[in-house]
Image (tube, rainbow, N blue to C red; front, top):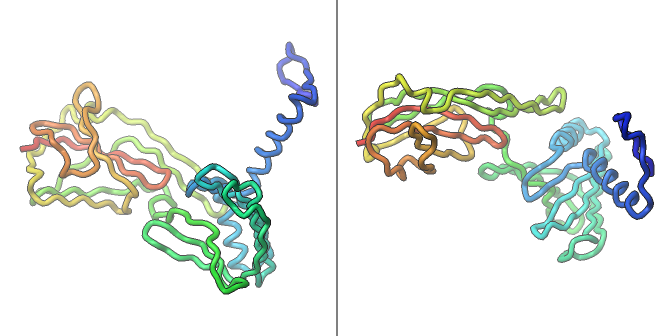
Length: 269
């Protein structure tokens, strides 16, 4: 195996078979991963390939999907799905699964159903030989906020007061279906303590009714309490906050792979 370098002083070198073969296999694995969907316990890689597969099915176009799903123990199970415009031919290779059947299984199915359960979308093959369903993938439901570059607005009401909130830094990913590309926009911002230097704290009582809503519901929310040095504590609901007196609160919302922050200044009774 020959390795070429763009650094003139290095010239080129060779790897003998002992080292060249595993390196070649590694490169082949990396290359093949770019052509297939990878499912690592719900974390989907190359999801755009799956989106194209669904579009082809909707248009009744012949298509092929290659998928590797990893078990909890880290063993790969290889899937190959061929669609001829009417039927699905499914091959599931379990031979590398230590706790699997160690076989290659083949099925014929007529339909791929989409079932929404909470924040997940289950894609299940139905109309299969043997009259049972086969789960293909379970993916996190794409929220409206994660498909376009609009940072969700937030509304916080404590008692009868609507709290003034300031948007901070964010990292936002959006998928362009026309190009099949995901782009991420990141912005930096002054730290929460710097943002609130000239802002008057709002007096609140957290024992009063608290309501917090977003334009698009996040998958997770964190509440960071800041002082002049940085974060002093983190909570996962407003009811948990123990601090009293003047505080700077940073609200962090998560939408799949996107993240946005919001800041306010409170004087907690």
